[in-house]
Image 1 (tube, each protein chain N blue to C red):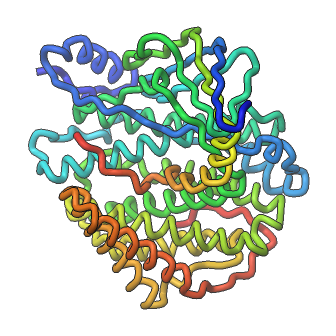
Image 2 (cartoon, rainbow over the protein chains, first blue to last red; image 1 turned 30 degrees about the horizontal axis):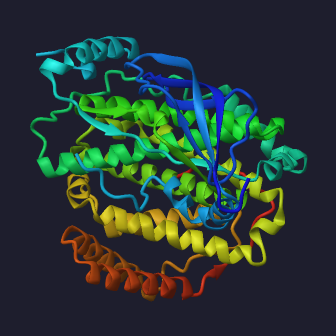
Length: 98
Length: 365
């Protein structure tokens, strides 16, 4: 990991999207044990995965992990905390635009 | 006219109706698409693994037992109480605000689910991973229920965000405890206050989802209890400099709720609720509850405190208007004023509180 430079990694992953009445969730599991650190970016490759209503879709895909530079990691570790308010239901987020 | 999933008597039937609707959707019903954009988090997982619940096992075990027994398992299903909603006849302003309310609630439940699941997956402490698994279950269930209400309103939630680039941000465990503890407890206070109000004033219940709030908020209550116990395992989390952080989070959470609620005037009018009355009720309940673990409460009875809060809300309304008008200079001015008012709100002295030896409580409002 460089101070300023980012590196790219490929990792196999499993995506599970549940669009059911009983449970609405979406998770990515990285399958090669790679650990995601603060500031890293993860993008699942391939077309958008859509689960029709009432179904759970599980797919094996490849993810690209864009590792944050050392500076970015430090920045995120120091200031990432302030985004914690988004966990609240009435967050400062913009109104939904429809 | 399609049969509405609101007419379904079981979840299965509702799903079948909704699936049929989906296949016809392109031609018959224009569903509005809203992309859920939860955040992705990392934290100090070693610190979470190091939590020792043995010192609080007397309070911890009954809580986990109860969550395992899953008292709300059958609750989030539609039954005869789910009345037909007249979406077409609803005042457009109310509809917009109510849908905004549902989407932000769904996103919050969903984000909670993503966070808890991540903690469950990356942790190795069995007690902790078990807790987060149980909470993720509840949040996903709530999100599914809200999602269904949104679908009836013609809003499709898009879960396609995983194939977009997602940045992982970082929260220290203690900030997760403060924020999620408060968010769960204030969530309980908000839901139960609306539920009790509508019990007395059923004519204002313009959507059946409010009937589900009582058992729903008991899940929030239980999650809050779990975070209170987690904080109890380490007295440092509620003493010293951390008392300042607690004050910061209390202030931020109360102020955010107040500002957000004032952005939904039609929603509150339809419920027959004055947002100022509502805020006072919710703050009073939340403060009372948070005495179980926090050594301070905000002095919400101090007239200065509420006056500053009102000013903060007004500046935020000005800021929103400046943003709409793309007036950069005014935006800067309003942001600066908002920051200063927030600091002065923080400066109002808090009330100290002697934390009881026994933490656990039962929902009583």
